Length: 375
Image (cartoon, rainbow, N blue to C red; front, side, top):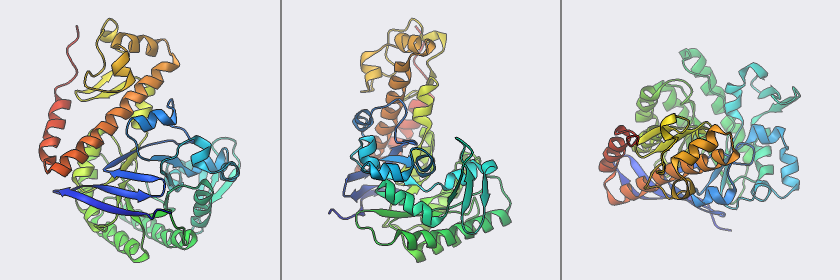
């Protein structure tokens, strides 16, 4: 079996490019992970996702635990076989739902008891159960179970939450055990507080993980506060391990995170936006439902290789979106995912060539110019 590991190939400022090795293939970093919450990236076939350049997907422990259940997926051969994706999969731990479904859960030192948002049935996730679910799913990268408060929150709340997450990280590590070919990532917490981030990083380093995530950001604090926190938080994590910023984000969030030393990110934004008619391009964001596109024979972005841009006009995409045709979600999601993967490929190339600063300037200048003029 191929061993797991991380190799850094180049660095330009704090930005790094490299490769995470897994038995199911290499993950080129910086990497963006499309989100396949319920064992599918909405409106996309797995081979279509792969064609955009994605090396890895994210699956959701909480949602898959409820439906169709981790036990059923294991019986059917594991998550890769179940969803027909033979590349690596990272599964989150269920910890984000501890925050996002606060009205449906009870939190104790032992873990979290949820009421299912589907049918109201009761379920418990503990660090041990989270590790068990993720093992049943067969994910290549497993996240330890954590809890984070929505921001803003007071220092006492952030401190107690972070320290419990560190105790849960230790229990997650013990429950994960020795699983060759699979990686376990710890999650740094501490809100926007530098001293708590340092305390969390030290606790995680002492436990020892295969990779380290920055958690508890992109939860309402705004981009400026997030970047200010990443300016110090990322440096606290080991240089020789991958660093993952959870739940981020918009294109400029991603570029700013890579500039601060982040290697991996995930977000529902490209697929969710595709379904609502929001399109990301090199010239900024456009809304396909606007009437200005109704008679426009041009592509969304003439420099994009995706099928939406290669084969269809803005006029057609406007029509199928307005008509609520399923092909609209498919094509616009494909385009957005392609755009995100093109950003990652561009950054990897720029870091390797030592011109990341210039690449960033060109990226921001392109997006600032805005969409092409209407006909």
